[in-house]
Length: 398
Image 1 (cartoon, rainbow, N blue to C red):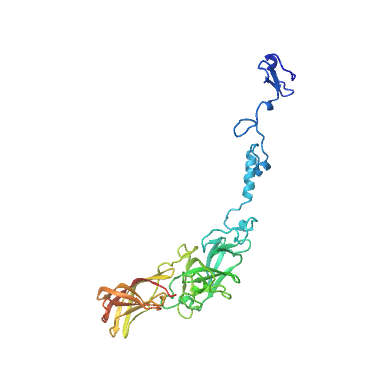
Image 2: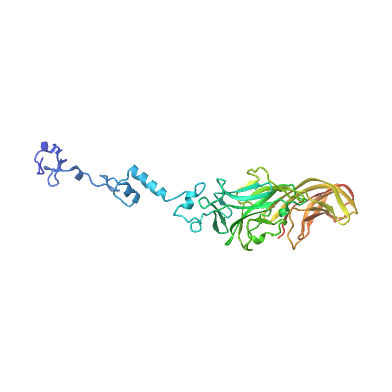
């Protein structure tokens, strides 16, 4: 079949297979036929016209700028793989994340928008060494942090990197945080774990009975003070250094000169791996006394518990005993924390003077004793079955 115009339909039905051509009607005359190649018969496809397309290569698909070629499954897979290669999800140990060139390992330029005090790839480890107590930061895998497997924590407004072993140890033999006092010795106490930072020491770790600190000057530097914080390094500590609570653990200090540490089997209730600012309801053994020359002895403590919430302490005491000596107007019990200075605190409570009556609980400014009186401030009688029942909340010492 030639390229000439044909004059009959018989010839028009013949396909020129050698030259890959078929006849069609000529645009010039409906009675004439012209031979054309099939690719001239089908228009190029667009977003509004059906037609033929060219397949895009994987490289063209990855580039993603071509608007006329069609994507194949293989090309789509290649583009997805290339996209994923440029991003690293937060995996369990952040190893790949920290080493990825897209991110700065300090995370200060591309920070994790985590709340203050939360650990990323980290957890608290508490160990009774046999001669002391060690509190450490470990990775989620249970190893010391390293440059290739760091732990992150937001302290203040900056995400800090822990890339080496970090711990604090306090040996037996000291009344740490006043936890070995007569009221608290042998009682399980909740301690709050802190991370702090200064430019010289870097990230430091500490633990304290007090959950309300925000900076270094909120702690006491006296080891036996109830607001003492056992910190790994304080050589260059500054009053304004930021500190964040990162969790809480339970431990016990024995009485006497031994002051020996012990720890329970840790569970989700007594080892908390997140910022928390209150204790559980904990046991205390108050010391009791009477005012003036009156004694308050042979006391049965039916209930004596306390809870710390931030900078406040709540107590629930129920104690029954025998008064002796010279009659006086106050029965006293010691508190787990001292109270704020500059103001005397008063609360309505119940007391028992053979029968239950109304009374008052008073905490004198800056002291750690609650004094219970009858509603009319008259003296307690002498004898058995006198009781105090204070259930109050008070602000702890500054």
